[in-house]
Image (cartoon, rainbow, N blue to C red; front, side, top):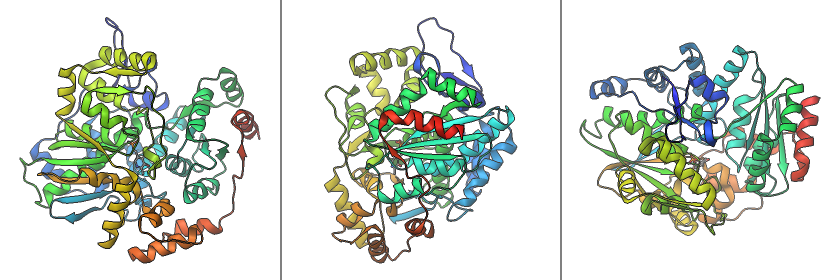
Length: 486
Ligand SMILES: *Cc1c(COP(=O)(O)O)cnc(C)c1O
């Protein structure tokens, strides 16, 4: 199967590319992305069969159904990365917290964020493609905190790959910062920017389009690419865990064959939620995918009114920083799937020119068949964190948003995206605790939850800082150029 460009003019023949091509160059014509135009279908009989499988076998079966151009042996090696999770046999524990309420814990990977679910296997595949084509790549990423550690970790010492990670010097949690500045790997470089996430992101965008920078890289035999969630290679692995959770509920007889479930997803760039939508298209009986936001609730407005409106909007800093996003890139793939490439281009052009687009009433109805949306304030999230702490269950500030949408007649799965250790200050505040420093805070929280602080996090406080650089925005390019020449 091939992937199709998401934006087109009337009469234009749609370009289709192999997965391997879309992985290495994720942008398509007119500034669009690549997406599947049809999906393999999982029948009831096959769901029953799949329900018997462990996660790694399940994942391979799902991937095989797409008939992509990448060899099974490469996928197999990629999936092996889940062995680095807390429980290699079951990387994604599904916890029951009420009669009809489950939590899909996706944060048990090496960097304690759900980004590992996709980036771990993705890193393996990208390095393997680079080796096969005898090319070298510089992978860049800008992060608000979770993508950075996960990208560095997946590519540490990978062949034919170098990574540069840009983070806002005062914009991440302390644990996230330490994860990045202490990350080992001779092919890795982490640079702090004096500024916020927008500064990091805009620096990345300008470098990706900078011919002089690309020429410098070419001299060092490096192609430039990015590891953000617009890469379909990441989305593929985000379908699997939603489908797996559905198969588990069937297997455990929590739901019957003809019964529908709801999935709640804390959303930013909409990659995670898109994975749930694709799982539904493959035959998982999902009634509503519930999109939950924080105070940056542009998606709440979009799914309820059909209007995507950037006018006069400013980013608000919340206790769930990975969801502090205004431009949600993967909505484009939903538009493409529902309305086709021509309409998608019209809408995305509108957004670019007018900072705004509006779906027709018919189109909005189409979207509402699959989605509902709401948002939760920081205050509300702190209440949920405290409430569940009393029951002995830890939820991080991102996962906490989900509880606003957890009520349903259907069995519901909450998608949990980060481990609480990454957000100690917010967790302490919600639980009305205080601490002298980050480490003390983590210990107090561990006590509260009767859990242990994972060794990989504790050891950060004594680790050597390998990437101390914090520079002005306009010095980034020369910092990177120097580093790649060494
Ligand atoms: C990235 C991230 C999100 C948002 O996921 P999207 O796929 O971008 O919608 C939510 N929570 C956490 C903890 C994250 O790291």
